[in-house]
Amino acid sequence: MTGAANGIGAAIASLAIRQGHKVAIADIDVAAAQRLAGSLGEAALPLDLDITSEARWTAAIQATCDHFGRLDVLVNNAGVVHPGFAGEVALELHEHTFKVNALGPMLGSLAVIPYFRKLGSGHIATVCSMTSFLTLPGLVSYAASKHALRAMHFGLALEERGSPIDFTIIHPGATETAMLEREAEKGVAAAFSRAPATPEEIAAIVLKAIKDKKTEVCIPAARGRVVKAIGANPRRLFELVGKNEQIGAAMLAERQLKRH
Image (cartoon, rainbow, N blue to C red):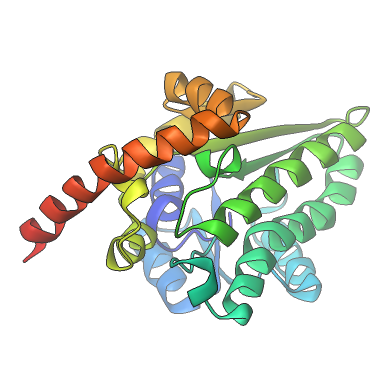
C-alpha cells in the first residue's frame, strides 16, 4: 500500500494487520514507514517508494513478493496537496500534484497488472477523493488531479475487464489528516463545511469495499450522490461552493480557536 506511513494509509495498514492481513507499508517517508512497521510486527514490511518512479515500483513489487511470497492487493493511497489559490501556487507544485496524485497510481497499476494477470487474480484499490466529482477554490490542481485519477482508474478497469483483476475506487470526503491541516493553514474554507471523518473511519470503509469488491464507494454514500449531481451542474456548483464557503469559514474559525 502506498502512502501507508501516515494518515489514512497508516490507519488502513493497522486495521488490515489486525484483521489478519500482511501489509507492505510503502512510503516516500521511509523513516515513518519503518516506525509504523516496527509497531505492527512481522506482518508489516516497510518499503521506500517514490510512486513517480517506474524503477522504484518494480523494486517495491519484487520486494513485497520476495518477503511475503505473493501480492494480492495494490492499494493506491499516496497523495499530496498544495493548497492555495491557483495563481499563488508555484508551477512546480501544481506539477508535483499531478505527478503524485495521478501519474504515480497509474505507474503502480501498470506495474502490477502483468503480475496479477500471471497470478490469475488480483485487486487494485484506489483511494481517490470526493473532489474527483467537483472542484473547490484553493484546491484547483488537487481536484483536477483527482478527476484524472478517477478517469485513469476506470480507464484501466475497462481495459482489463476481461482479465482476472478486480478494481475498486473509494472517495473519502474531508478527513482529519496532515493534508487537511495544510488546507486549514491556507484558509480553504469550502473544505470545512462538514465535520471531517477520522482516518480510522475511512480505513474500515476502504477495507470493507475491497473485501466486497465494490466498484465505487463514496464516503458518506448519500453525500456522494449529491456531490456527483452538483459537479455535473455548473450553476448548482457555484451555489453550493458559495454556501459551503460561508459555513466552512465559521467552522474553520472555530477550529483554529480551539487549536490556540
